[in-house]
Image (tube, rainbow, N blue to C red; front, side, top):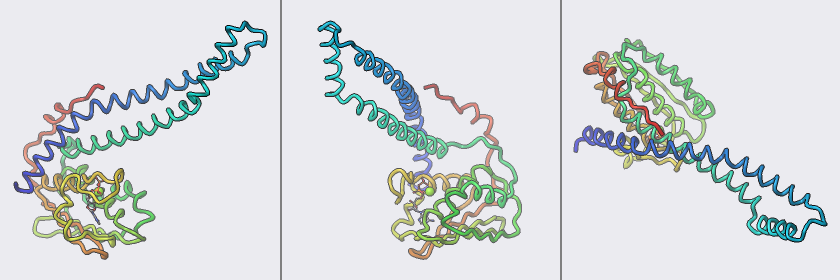
Length: 284
Ligand SMILES: Nc1ncnc2c1ncn2[C@@H]1O[C@H](COP(=O)(O)OP(=O)(O)OP(=O)(O)O)[C@@H](O)[C@H]1O
Ligand SMILES: [Mg+2]
């Protein structure tokens, strides 16, 4: 299959999977939240029972004292205090897990989603600057940012989607830095295209990985850190703008991603209204 067809069919698959997972994970998450709330009253009731038992007078009937003793024994042998404590931890870990799944589902939906944000002539430098602000926490201890903004015209595009592309590439650049490095952002106009080159002085990408980095779920990051969807999503968005995304990299030296965007992209008919009505809300 051609790369483009492959991406399109994976996009559809991703959308289907995201849709299927979204509902169950929403109620798993909600139920975990309810369970978390239930622990407190259970604990309160148990404490009250304990106090009642401790308050039992010495001369209470034998039968009652027996029952109190059974309660104490069960409480001890089953280690109820530990169970309560552990239940809290288990639920909060599970919630972290379900939060993470929800995030991944959201990314998958964005990935296959033609966003409904307005398309217009937009200033790419504005997009880059607001993206840098958003990514600042990831960047500030890792890299110095050098801007070499050229004289470029506004580009007909989906600005929010392009910002998503810039964000993915800039965050990847920051992640690639072992020590402090430099992220250089250069823009220029050439032959009806606006070019945006984002370079880093990070670890670089080995040759054998260069052909894989745009594939969904390709990641070299540890579990929980990367989904491997950033560049696949970026690739889709740039393609939609009839643009190109190129990569050059040298291991140990750094990487440059260049995004080429036609100034007057043919974005097809305005489908925003249709897509809005297809945007279902899912009830848990
Ligand atoms: N600037 C870069 N320097 C070095 N390696 C990179 C760079 N950008 C991307 N890569 C490599 O490409 C892989 C895929 O990148 P991509 O953005 O698609 O996914 P990710 O960053 O691993 O996860 P996600 O973006 O979904 O959180 C990365 O795991 C990394 O190995
Ligand atoms: Mg990424």
